[in-house]
Amino acid sequence: MISEKRISQYLRIALSTISVDREMKERIGREMNYDIQNKVFDSGKGNPFEVLGDPAAYAREFIEERKSTYPKVRMRVSRAYGLKGYAGYEFISKMTVAGLPIIHINTLPFGVAKGIIAIGNVAIGLLAIGGVSIGVFSFGGVALSLLLSLGGLSASLFSAFGGLAIAMYLAGGGLAVSYDFAVGGAAIAMNYSIGGFSSARVAIGGEARGVIAIYEQSGVGNYFLRLPKTADQIIDFVISKGEVISAVFEWTVRLIY
Image 1 (cartoon, one colour):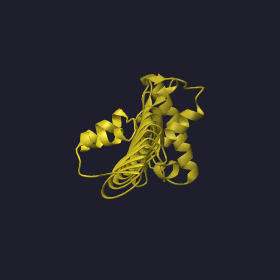
Image 2 (cartoon, rainbow, N blue to C red):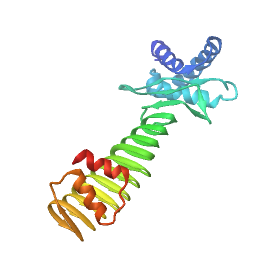
Image 3 (cartoon, helix red, strand yellow):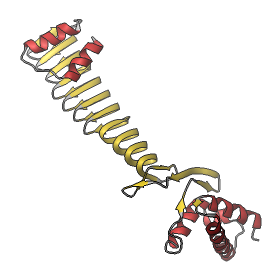
Image 4 (tube, rainbow, N blue to C red):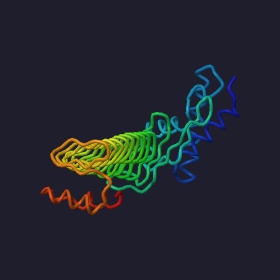
């Protein structure tokens, strides 16, 4: 037996995800109601949530199939409802740049957020925030970026910070790996490193391995300096061995020591 109450509830939720003028929404509502009634009737079941699934997903598919009829319709905040209730939502801003929305938030199951600012389980954008984030600036469980990443697993072409951080220029974290400069519990780099375990051309830390090893417990290298020492003493020692140090490395040494 078809439940009119359930159909009305389903239709109301589906329409709430559509951004359009009142007259057009009423027209869409009539078409949706007819479509829902037919599909529920054909299924032999009475619950549209069981037959059609998430109202937000149904509404998106409904509008997608009628793009030529409703070209100006946009989807807005869309809450996902399954048989067990609320599952997520989606918001897409009306304003766009180069075809991308300024803001796209998508926490629907298996949803992907793509925008200038993207927030979601998977987020791709200029600024990306999510479980998996990819962007110029990325923050999340797994963060991949061009300039700055912050996350549990963080990788960037410029700078990355996190539990495991990998970057070309600057990495900081539990395990930090970088071409230029790494700081962390274990820090590994080509040029400079500071950490509990430190390995680089200029290495500073508890256990330091490099051409210049500045250490507390043990050091392996060509030139050695035993800590503790002041920042000025460390910097002067490194320069005395022919090294030209970077401003970021010097600033970090002065900050720590």
